[in-house]
Structure formats: structure tokens, C-alpha cells
Image 1: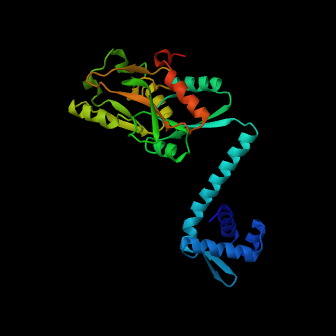
Image 2: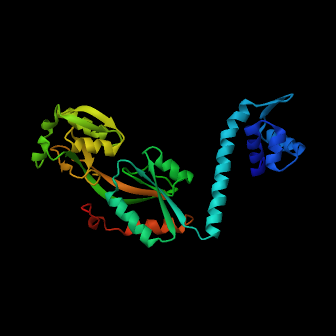
Image 3: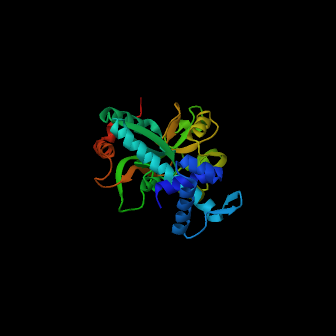
Length: 297
């Protein structure tokens, strides 16, 4: 099969009319009929039922329609990339970021990259822990930032960026803000704001259950901005990686008996066959002194 056959079939699925689809395809009706017949032979099954003037898709036709649409979108994307390259357009760098990683440190890096890579356009995409690697391997993303180390894969390059400790977050007026280090038993029966995307959820719960200090979950969400605003308003407490604050005014305190931390990683497809912009971005990441990248301003 080829792109022309796929495009002709999709024209036909829109109208279910051979005459109209042939006109859209710029071919005669017999030519279109022969193209669809060859496609059916290649796939080993009928794509359409024709009953007089009534034409409808078979089960196979319905199944391949979505896949053909994806193929056509990919072909159009490749054509667009080629056109942009010919006309000197900016090379796009598509990056994914899980929601549990706050922008303060990484936004400074992205701004720096924009200055150092003037021929690039950076596009940031929200991802979750389960689909980030899949999107990188499929080519939908050039790379992604993750809060946990991915499994080893021969096609992937992983750069370790920085560490951040897990801390208890509360509002300035909350009673736990007075402690330099919060005793774990002070969390028992405390109103808890549950960050569903937190990599530490299961481990923190295990520790608190062991210490009989389990707080009461009252609000749960994947939206970091909503949860942190609730905590800042003294609506409860939550656990946050220390560089993941996005709400000004939050107080962070260590908790006695909870010594957890995570590393932030950048993952991309390995090898020199990747774009020059991605290669330069990886070099930039590898050269950063993260101790000098503050979150104070």
C-alpha cells in the first residue's frame, strides 16, 4: 500500500460515495475502484460493502480507518518539517514534563536554552509517569523530565540532573510551621492534601502507618496548583519535593523519621542520529551546576 491509496480510502470513508471520492482524489472512478480493490487484496479482507447505491464500511474498514488517519497525520507532519527546514523555520524541541516537577529550576534552564539555541522553538507538554518514555520512544517527544529513574533501555539516554528532599508543606499560619523539624506523631489526624502524582505516596503512607501517625486525607487531585493553594490557605498539609513549590508563601519542614529524596532525570533517545538541537540541549543539561541554580527568584 502507499500514501495515495490511504488518502483515497479516507476520502471514500468521508463520503461513502465513489464518484465524490474519485473527484477529491483527482482520479477516475474506475481508477479509484481498482485502488481500493488492490488495498483489500493487500490487507486480506473487504473494506467496504457495496449494495447497489449503498456503500458502508466493514468491520475491517472501521478498524483500519483510525490507523490510516494516524499514518496520514504523520506523513503531513514530515512534510511540514521538510517545508520548515527549506524555509529556515525554527527547529522544534518537544519536551515532556511530569506534573510533580515544578517549573522554578527547569524554567531557568529552558530560558537559558532559548538564548543558547536561537534556531530552536521549545514546546513543553504535560505528561504522566506512565506515558513519558513511550512518547519519547515513539518520536512524539524529543525528551522528557521525570522524577524517577526509568528502566534501562538500549535506545534511551538518561541524564541525572539534581536531587530534592521530600518535605512537609504547610501555610505560614499553620500550627506545624512553628517546628524546625516536625515530630511524626503531630501528623496523626491532621488534615491531609493528597498529591496523586507524587512518586512518594506509597512509601510515605507505609512510614506513617508504622508510626501510627496517619493523617486524614480530605482533598485529592493531580492539579499541583490547586493543592498547593489549599495548603497555603492552611486547609491542610502535604508532602512536597523541596524544589517543587509553585505557591509563594508555603513553609517547608523536614519530618522526623521520614528521610526520602528523589532525583530528577532527563530522558531522550540516544545516539548521534537525533537532531542537532536535542544534542545541544543534552550538552547544556550535562554542563549545568545545579547548586548554582537557585529557586529564590
